[in-house]
Structure formats: structure tokens, C-alpha cells
Length: 469
Image (tube, rainbow, N blue to C red; front, top):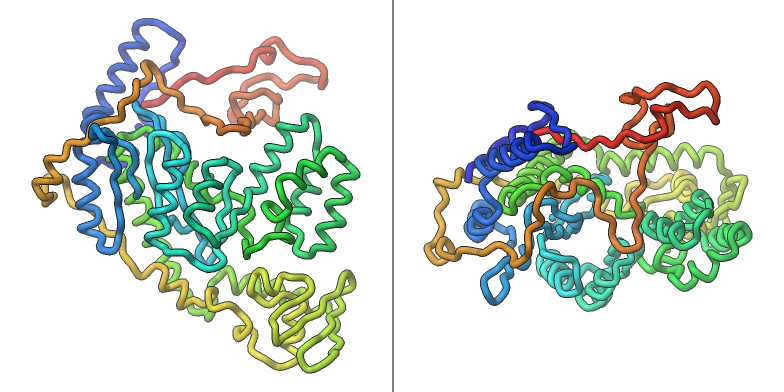
């Protein structure tokens, strides 16, 4: 199977647009499109047979990497550990599982990915087990995800000391689905991001005054699972799973590929990210990472407006004109809780450090040092050779993996988002005509002269069913 650049596989902006309105001509064009893709990428069944050899070559050319292939008793595909969690859109569908985090420069770091047939307890348990084998069990580990029950079960079985936090965006969507018509987005975000317990209690009381029904619901969920003030671990600034959603958006086209071509695209993506981060690391000449230096500069500017009142040699009261702060330099804590949660000096601690004529870098966690940032990207992700140059043992080459024992969906496969349980799809409207299916830059509908006036062409929103190949 030959690997081609992505823009050739997916067509880019080249080729005619096919409107799927009906007719034999469209059916012939669709079959021609599928035959062209199979010529370039190979068939999905052929891709599964090459998968064991591909995993062997990938580990051979990237020492230190880890892959694992699990098959059913009859030799059919079940799970391969190698990045994501959306639905696949290929012939046999399936799921991708992703583990991502942020490095010390606040950039996305892809930890692991896996491909399975369906999202259930056993597959999530297997994914976290393999993840623990690679990265071990870190003290104070925090895992942020949605409220899928399989994820919670797997985390508590594999990571006994880890803290499971709920994505604030998924929880807000669950609230909107359960309590229709409420609009408390800003109050909810302030509650989630509050550092102090007193601030959280005040905002939560205000939220319950606006919507009384939310109080028992949020209490049943558990404050420690979604609020920063009650969090049992350090979440830093990761309160959502947006970094995973961002990777899902990048891979939206690649999810249609056969499994071996998809694995190669993921490997190529990680290789490009590592090279870009290595380039950024080499440019950094400061003691801390770029994002950490920016945060310290912001806290320094805030500290210029504050006044210091020493209480003893280690405890200081800082007046900021609002809630003030009590800083303990020996324990490295502040009453605002930013110092101990982010492990970087807050504005209150910054003015104390200036008063003591100390070095602000001595009070920063080693994780933010540029040397630690550089150590993350010391390894190199190597390019795989052409398939004709693969050296694979006979026992692996003869292992012909079969495709999943599942009925493939005939006809045009679904391209749009498949919502999870309790999740709804948000349809964006055009800001010019308030219709769905397009945005204001491509809008061709006439704008009504009166808000209540709707033209005939705007009564039925246009549905774009075209596809480019």
C-alpha cells in the first residue's frame, strides 16, 4: 500500500462537486470515487492485513515506542494501542481513544492513541492499563474527561491514587439538556474557575438564586469533580477537554482512512509536532518557558498596584484593594490559592519577593524550567521507509489480521458529528440571515428589511449535500 500526501487522498479543493440529489449518474460517480480511493489507499480489508507489519516496523524505527495489538479468538481486529476518541467514519466505523496533556509551555502533547470497535468498559480499561505501563502512576495525577461511566470505572480500577475531574463544558451541556431554557453560562464559568472556597460559595449562592434547580443537581455531581476550589488535585488551567476536541478537529478528514493509513497519518502528525516544538525550544533563551514568563510578567504588573504589610519574617499581608492576600513564603502558599495551585508566584507573592530582594525563579516549580521543556522533546519520531523496504519476520508477516466481524454500512457514510450519550450537536447560524447550512461570508440570501419579514428564499434553509473528491 503506497502512502500519498494527504491533499491527494482527500482531494483538497480539486475536482468537481457532486450534489447527492439522486439519479444514476451520481451513483456512478460515487462508485468511481470509492474505486479511486481504494486504488490510492488500498481496501479496508487489505489495510487490516498490513497492520501487524506496520506496528512492528514503527517500533523498530522508533526505539522506546510501544504498540499493542489485541485480536479476538478468531483473529479479527479488536484494539490497537498506538492517539483519539471520536467516531471513525470508515467502512467498519469504530472509535479512537486519545490521551493528551499540556507541556510546560502550555502546548498540546499527544501521549497515546488507540483504535477500537466500540466504546465500552473493557476497551477503556485496556487503554488506561497500557497508558499506565508507558507513563507509570504519577503522584497527584488528574484526569479530565466527560461523564462517560466507562471512563470513571477504568480510572478507578487502574489509577488508584488519581483524581478524576469532569470537563466543565460537558457538564454545562448536560445542565442545558436537563433544564431547558436556562442561561447561566457566565455564573457557571465563574463558579468553576474560582480559586477560593469563599468566592466559590458566594458565586454558587448567586447561581442558585438565579436557578434554584441547579443546586441539588450540582451537589449530586460533586463539587470536587468540577470546581477548582474543591479540586483534590492540581488542574492548573486545564478545566476542559478542549485539547482533545482540537485534535479531533484536526483528524476529521483522516478518520475516513483505512486503519493502517490512519495510523501512518497519526505518526506523521506526532512527528511534525515534535519537530515544531523542538524548534521552539531551541529559540527559547530564557530560564522559564515562554508561557510561564508571560504569566510572571502579568502577575508583576498586578503587584505594582498592591501594598505590603509584614506580620513576621515569613507571613505577609498584601492589600490589593479587593480581597487582599496572606502570603506564607516558607510554605509557599497564599490565601488566594493561585500560588499553591499553579505553582507559580501570584501577584501577592510577587510583591513579597520584591520586598525580600529574592529571585522570583527560586519560587517557581521546576516543571516550568526551559531545561525541563527541552527534555520533553529530546526523542525523535522517525519517518518509516517505503513498504517495499520493510524487514518483517515471517511469523509477523504471515499473521493476516481480519477485518472486524461487523456489517459494513452501505451507501454514503455519515460525515457529520455523532453525539455521545447526553450530548447535543450545536448548529451554527449565519449572522446575516439567521439560517443554518452556511455562514455570513457565503450567504446568498436577501437580508429582510424588517426583523419579522422573512423572504420566500429564506423559508427553507439550504442544505449542502455536496462532497468534493
